[in-house]
Image 1 (cartoon, rainbow, N blue to C red):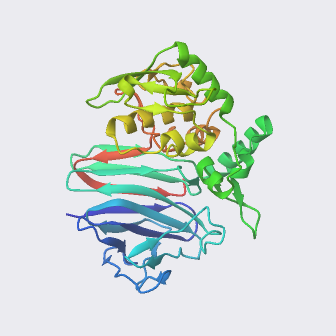
Image 2 (tube, rainbow, N blue to C red; image 1 turned 180 degrees about the vertical axis):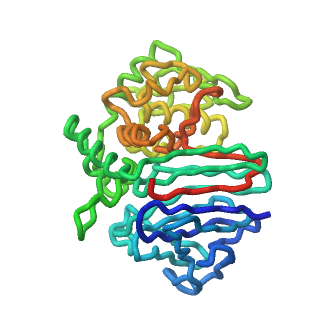
Length: 379
């Protein structure tokens, strides 16, 4: 079975599209420039080898451009604006070398490019817009199923990047924390090129936001020394409870205080700012244990949204209007959601965490019977 995709170019200029992913046979897949022919790269003998075929799909500036793809997992639909297409490479494997926004020597660094993510299987299509790494081109999604029902994610307006960059600089004028360092400008024109996330910014400069969350983390630890924190894993493990206690395994005179959950299923030392922004390092490093990793996702989301001091029932007690209201919070994520026309977009890892019957603000569309997926680029 194949998926029909229609792309609308509202950028007012030249736009290229690219499709990458992994097939059900675990093969690397790219779509050729005609929008219908599959390309399965073979393993090259050297690193950074060029693709054997042209995979830059020219997107019409009038009407729509149609693509057809097979079942794919971990797939991305990439876009680049301007006359210079993106460059992808192959390493032995084959392994795809993708464009990077954190590597200033990458050949694609000065190009305005972006992507949305999707997985298409025999059971469903799931797609979402993402700001986890950066913001550049406005992308909107529309998914119509075989019954005629349509879901939409509006994305950012045409001037979304400028709005985000201006707001990051304004936030830095307020707290001086370094939000302006997330604004990337073109070396040739000085115009806004993209806004990177705190996690990406830290990858580029590991001193950025050092200590930013320390005061908030201390307040959280103080609160849950006396108050019980309830986390709903939202799977068979149900609710687990945690409190901050002394670490029994710490032999130092000044014993470390750790957040410990029911029967020791999950124990967390105090996270650093980089751990909170990445959701995947320090105490939030994936453990491979489903129950603990589900707790981690909900804790990390609450730290990014700064709701732990106002809600001891995570995430079932969460209310979207209370996200990002603390002075110390993930202002990048706040600004992205505020700039979105409908407030929806994946702004940090685990931004899909929310109350069981609450609003999904992750900017996703999903259907078990997709008929047509439309992607609008340009706002």
